[in-house]
Length: 100
Image (cartoon, rainbow, N blue to C red):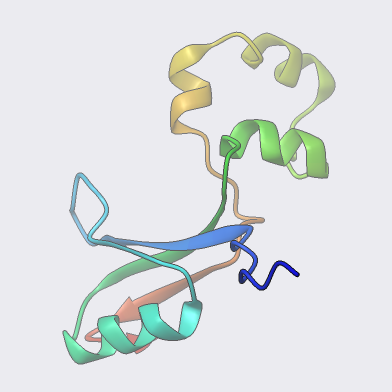
């Protein structure tokens, strides 16, 4: 019998205010919040799907909030795809380590 714990389908990534790169990646929101609080950080904690880019995940889930013609124009734009985010992703803003 296989007793492995299933891998998470998402991770939580923290981006500090003004940071160019992520400051931390967590398998649970609780562990991320503990780290953020303990370090009194400012920034945004966002849940990301694993093994799929956010743009393609948002298309699959119907969360692009884009007109069909705009979506069609952006489907092949590497810069757009690589930087795409959506407010539909679960996210929390923090100030001095506290959820805002």
